[in-house]
Image 1 (cartoon, each protein chain N blue to C red):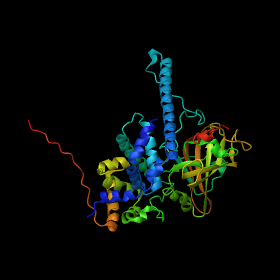
Image 2: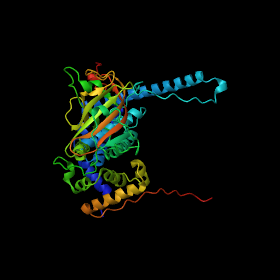
Image 3: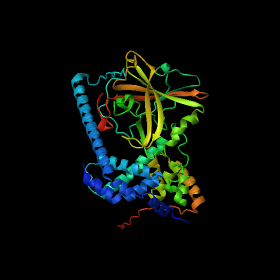
Image 4: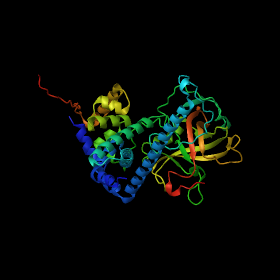
Length: 171
Length: 282
């Protein structure tokens, strides 16, 4: 067991990763539970990891994967109303500001699509692959979510996909 | 125009208050290390089992196939019993493979008695059912069903999903929404010899558990009047083994469709592997 790596990773990156978990789930405890699940998954599968930064990237990706899998499962027979907005309770930090309230009005899938697009700057095809949905479905989630967020927050700047440009010398 | 990415960053910063302190607690780190160690042990077992299976398969094929009949394909034997070989490696609690899938269903607007659950004709029409949120894990610990003197009461909750319940509280209320008056959920575990055991199943979100994390749980209560077959007599406890699992949801009174789902196989294991400090074989 690489106990040192766990400590190094969590000491250095708990804040960033817990914030990401909170952003994905909309709940502090759920975000932290997601973080722990992801750490366990990564360190079980990748025993030779030694670089905390590498581990952080993998944990972040695992958090995304685990959360999206749960969102898929939650939209199910057993939870037919799971797409209702997150319950707003007095302890819920989402009440504290406009962004939280606006996000709380999204379905879990819309919320995930928004985080992946606007926070992680993923391209639509990447999001579609991560969510195991078609690009049209992802665009539908984003259109609806952005319209809903814009109603509360005002116009939202579009995400500009980053394109890598390589300059080569003509022979 | 606002940059939503910047707004999300600022918003997310609110959600980490105290997170570093909580995750720095010795108890939390210790639990995480235990979890990783347990996962690695299971992965080791999986690798060993896979290597052994490959070796056995190669050896069997080598011994069973004379060189001059290599092109003659023999039909593979069809399994005749669901309760034959237990799995060597159990999926880790809460892992993606931890819960069963739904393989088929039977629906009727009429009543189905408990005794009929193991035998109703299941249809796979409409399968796969990717949106089914499974109501059972792939393995169930006997001591969570029957309890353990002075340690664990009978019908102790079995973990399904972890979390604070905010995502799952909807599922708790879904049954009343499906069945406006009242509903019951029954799980039947059917052995290869036709013996079967029925359990009342209740689903709820719990946040204070002495041995488990907060999350959604299913509680299986043995139903002495809902069992049958050669071995399930006089209230006999279900033995360890692999069983075909069926789940019935039905209105207790009032309108509603009765549905019986085929959930594939579930393994009943002895002891409490998920709670090592209480893991004793009874």
